[in-house]
Image (cartoon, rainbow, N blue to C red; front, side, top):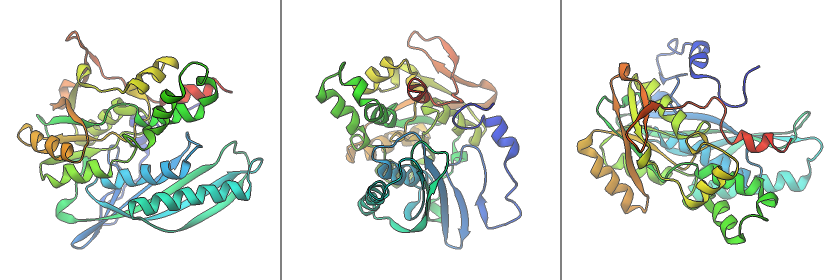
Length: 337
């Protein structure tokens, strides 16, 4: 049986179809690229689909942010959204679907995205709502950014830190259990990781791309920052080293990961953005992000592919950077079943 979460990168790459039959497909089904890209002349249409399967509270906000993040990571502006809402037959009510739709509409208004349509149904066999988005965006062809654009010797920059999305999900999904161990103020801060620092990387991507110094960007989701680094390396055919001492973890993220024995490198991490840039352009990018109030740091660099992908521990020793076939956050759901 396959584990819960993303498919193994090697297996996924082996089953992906060939998209070369259509010459207008600039980026098709590839490991490490955040979205598909189709040639529309001077502009490119950027297309992405992603489900929300872990979160139930504020599921509409998660949906819009997660799908728009992948568009932004390509240097594009998310503009149009279609949604499929699958409702569990035992819990489906008019109030439930109305609340989900209201959340989606509010998030779309916040990010200036048009909700264009989709599909809704009550589905047999579900124990929670599953919401799937299909986001479309647009970018001038000359400003398209690909994960495969990372180059040997590039700095690897990370915005905001590890486990932002996971922190919010844990605090919301396990709130009753955590209430006896942590203060209300602590749990409120953890839950508000959804919006502060927030799981959207639209501002991050626009600020970084606007500097003109970006070679590649990638949006960490399931499998966390560690798996996202592997995906970025796979797309660019490179190796990398990540320095543990440069990785930022909020107080709330650290506490909740410790509470449930989760490796912060492998928890779902929407809200962070990985950026590849030549060292000569790094300061410009970091400054541009800083002007938008976004913290960032150089966490490592890219190297030749035969040098591998490594985690440099604080004592200077190196070990292979782990890859998480199942996101660490799945453990919090296993314990409730």
